Length: 55
Image 1 (cartoon, rainbow, N blue to C red):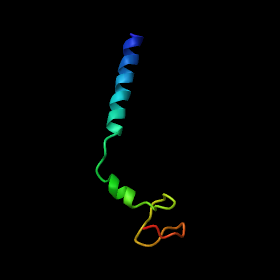
Image 2: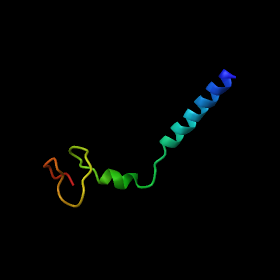
Image 3: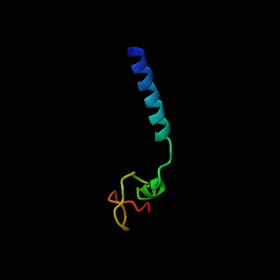
Image 4: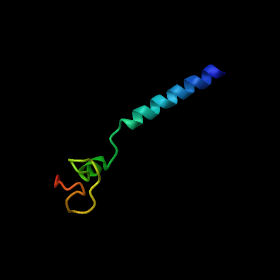
């Protein structure tokens, strides 16, 4: 019984890993909202809070 539980757990983890590799809609938009210099999210159209204008 314990072996069956372990196998099901490992299969579940493998399925989750496959879904985690998929590209979800909106990922490119979220990446575009980050500062290329520091990696923080930019809010609005102004420069980043780090002081660098990395669009």
